[in-house]
Image (cartoon, rainbow, N blue to C red; front, side, top):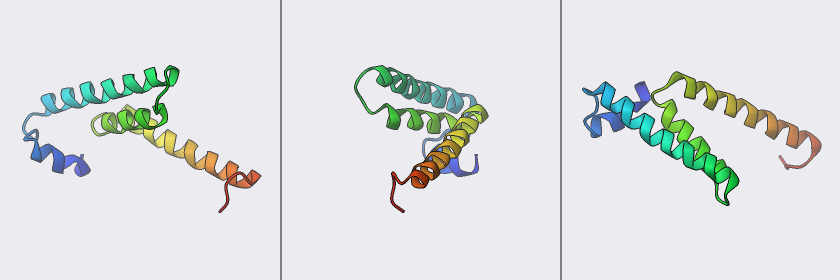
Length: 89
């Protein structure tokens, strides 16, 4: 939580860890749910889903793992696309 101290201090949530975790879970979960709905409906699901996960990753270890996995998969995909010549270097 080293990188999160700024916004937590600004909102006065440093002394309220349960409230902070609840707010992050509600906000991140809601954004993640909207992203899942946008997979089916027209909309920018590929932007909303990582945003929801990033918010959840600020408090939850399981979400950090998903963010790391997404970064690895993205890097692997970019390497593969460069290899077959879809993306110029």
